[in-house]
Image (tube, rainbow, N blue to C red; front, side):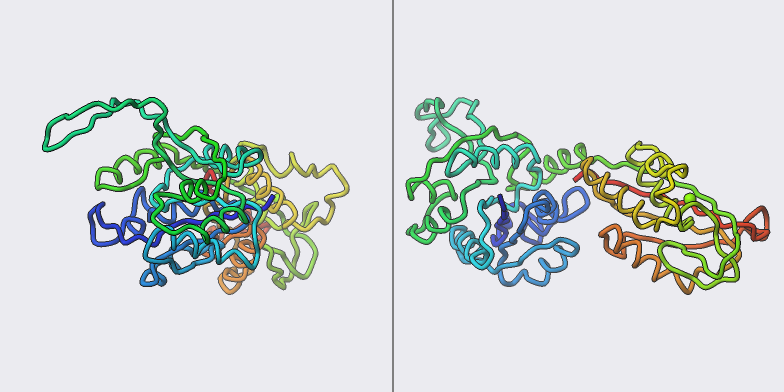
Length: 376
Ligand code: MG
């Protein structure tokens, strides 16, 4: 089943205070819209519907994410329709429509909506109303209202794509949300459990509440790796995936890429999943002469399987020679390519050991590395 997410961010709402529409303001270190987009990064397609004036801001914000930016309309419903129409060339089977101002939405809610879509035309999260309800006028209570059967609607609201597209095309306008549009077309909508944390940032206080949820949920792991290979016969070394002509080679069971091994071990370390030797035993002849990108990719894939993305890696090579500086950019680019990261997430640097110790005597090369992993 293919799934698209449409993030509706065309509003100009400044009720939240501050100089910018709320979706571009920062909360817990990054813009609200970035948090929200990252929640849906695993979908097959991601559409961000914006006000046309916000294009430059939106493009900068989407860096590193595969997002289609679509100009919206004057009303929420016309913005949603613009997002739906943008998918007609590559139609998904299901679509999730989500308010940009709900950056704390959990993976559990998203998966509950998708699960409910297996048996219902539509599904959306909601919370039962628990406070007593009054009617009032002029500062006076004029009556009470039965709260039985009342729910506070949240997003993402999920639908089968062809049905919600047809429903939006046919709707005369003025709907409060996409569930109303869907119901007008006769679709059944299942209610799944919402969460208090899935709040919609509306007023200034909501930024503080959202920041609390986002910061408490931040799951970051840190790992280190260290590796050494001795010099042997040869006419080149391979360091961080880059072949450098040299008067000697590095000896080892694999291609002896000491830098890539240290980075790989840093990722395994962050996952508390042992080290490279445990996953690829040197006693096993099938790894003899293996290219180290195989190990690194395995570590990255293991991280993904365990629910983590790589935040950044930093590798320091320790040697007198060869000179690393002229190759450092190529090393960053190659490691970023292997790991599926931006070059800006990968650092490679070098130092000598002031002619001290085994690296100073040019008996071998050492590498240390650090990796951060961020829960996705
Ligand atoms: Mg090694």
